[in-house]
Amino acid sequence: MSDPEYSELVIEHFERPRRVGTLAPAADVVIGRAGRRDQGAEFALAARIVDDRIADTRFEAYGCPHCVAAGSWLAEALVGADRDRLQRWSWRELADALEVPTAKRGRLLILEDAVRALAEDWRRRF
Amino acid sequence: MSSPCIYLDYAATTPIDPRVAERMIDCLRPTGAHGNPSSLSHDFGRKARALCEQARTQVAAAIGARPDSIVWTSGATESDNLAIFGVAQFQADRGRHIVSSKVEHKAVLDALKQLERMGFAVTYLKPATNGIIDAEQVAEALRPDTQLVSLMHVNNETGVITDVGAIGRLCRERGIAFHVDAAQSIGKLPIDVESMNIDLLSLTAHKAYGPKGVGALYVRKKPPLGLRPMLYGGGQEGGLRSGTLPTHQVVGMGEAFAIATAEREADVARLASLRQRLWQGIHALGAVELNGDPERRVANILNVSFRGVEGESLQFALRDLAVSAGSACSSGSDEGSYVLRALGRDDQLAQSSLRFSLGRFSTDADIDAAIAAVAREVRRLREISKFERL
Image (tube, rainbow over all chains, first blue to last red):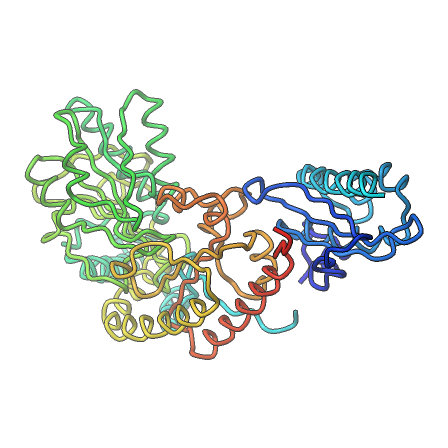
C-alpha cells in the first residue's frame, strides 16, 4: 500500500526500526530524553562514548510513525558523531531525509531536545 | 505487508448484500423501472411507483410504522437535518430549547450548533463513563420551553444502547418531540416507533447492506407532527422532501431492511459470538480497555483502547485491517475521539482506540487474523516505547 503521508524511508524505518531499546547503565553511557506522552511524542536516546565519539546507540520512541522512524534513523545516523556534531544537530536534517510534512515537524523539535539532552549528559559526564 | 485486507469496519458502512444488488440491478435494466415514480399517467411511472411503495412498506415494517410515515431522503445525515431543523423551526413558537448529548453523530451535533447560532438553546448531556445517557438525565434537563429531544439509539463509536423507550415515554408525557438517530440499529436491535413513543427516526441503507445515497426519516402521523421541509420543488414525499425518487436506491433500501429484519436474530447471535472471540483475543494482550458498557451494547461493535500505544502508529501498523480509529467521519483528525473523551478517557486512551465492527460477511478466520495482527503490532509498538530507564 502506498501512502502519500509517509515517505518510503519513513515506512521502512517504522516497520523495521533499527537500534530499538536502551544501553545498560555504565560509565561510558549517556542518555537524553524529551517529550511527554500526553504531548503525543516522547523520545529516549542512549549512546556509548568511546574515544570522544559515539560508538553505539539505542532509541525508544512513543509517537506517530514519523516519530518512530525519526528515532530509528537518528540512532543510526549518530554512530560515529562527536559532541560538536551533536550540539549542532538540527531537526531539519531529519525532516529533509525522511520528507516529514510540515504539520509533523513540531514533533521533530522534541527529538532535537532529546539530542540536546544527550549532548548535555555527555558534557556533564566526560 | 502483503496479506489481504480484512474488513472490520461495518459500522462505517457495509457492503451491499448480493440479494439487494440483484433487486437494484433489475431496476436499472432497460426492462426495469426507469419511469418517474411521480408519473402516474403511464405504466412506466406506475411500475416505478409500485416498487417504491413496496420498499416503503418494507422499511416501515422494520420499525413498526405505517408506510405513509416514511419519507425518503439521501441518508441519515439528511434525515437528521430534516428532523432537527424541520421540527425546531416549525415549533419555534412553542419553545427554543433542545436536549441532546455530547456523543451524538456530527450530523446531529453540527445541525444543533447551527440552531444555536439561530437563537436556539441546546443542552448537551454528558454520558456516564459507560457511555450511556439515561432517562433520568434527560428528565432533569427538560425545561418548560424544551420542544425537542434528539438522541441516538446506538452510539456509532462504542455501540452502547440508549433506552429510547424510557426516554420516549417521558417526552410523550410532556408533549416534547423525540428524534432518534437509528443509523446503527437496523438488523441489530428491534425497533417499534409506536411502543417506544418515537416521533422522528433517522435511517440509512448503507449500514444495513443496502446502497449508499438513500435513507429515510420516519415522521409520526398520529397525531401528525409538523415539520418544515428543507428542500422545495416538486412536492414529493408529502411536500417534506422534494425531488424525484431514485427507484433503484429505494428498492435496495427496502430489500436490505426486509432481509435485516428477517435475519436479525440469527445475525446477532453469530456476531455476538465472533465479537466475544475478538475481545478475548485482544484482552489477552493486557493493558487494554473496553470502551462503553460491557453489556448494554450491540453485538457487532467492539471499541478498545490500548495503553502505551500511540494511535496513529497503531492505525498505520494495522493498515491491512480495515478498522476505524475513533469514528470514521473524524478519523482524519489528529485528536482523540470526542466520544471517548466524553466518556472520561484521557488523551492517550482516547487517541489509541480502535473500533472493530463486524458484519454479515465476517468469518472466524477474519477474527483470528485480526487478533494476530493486533497482538503483533501492539507488542511491537510497546517494545519501541518501553522507556526501560523510567
